[in-house]
Image 1 (cartoon, rainbow, N blue to C red):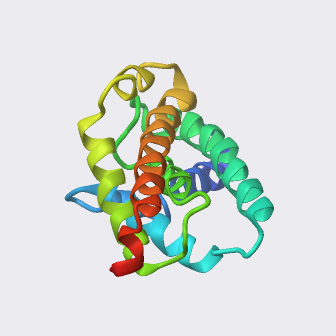
Image 2: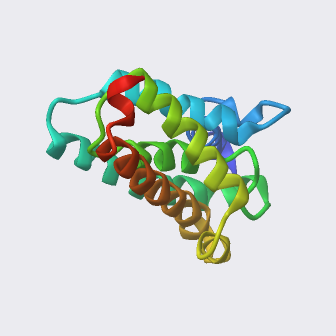
Length: 162
């Protein structure tokens, strides 16, 4: 993508971060590996402050758009499967304002992966947006769908018994 020593370092950093520290290089289901990284980041973060979580979430989305835009140029491919920063951000969206319980995290993981793979309307249209916005938008919407489902399940009291 870029030339010279600085370019090599920049491309390395783009690959490292956009691929979720190379979890996107997993030969099978790299999106699932990226989502699992999202779980680990969520476990590490789990801030007490909803405002801090929201700020971190927005930062992940904005940085994810930049990184995935650049990564498409580095990999020379639209929405390359090695780019998993979108799955990380999507999972973090999925968990917004939910209890930090193991059962919720597992349900969030499974439901997010289903929405991300099946891509019901309008998720399937969002990935057609240009550059990093298209890479990130479908996963953000899958995260919003997941978040809504988990909030409904939570309101029903399901997570209180499991």
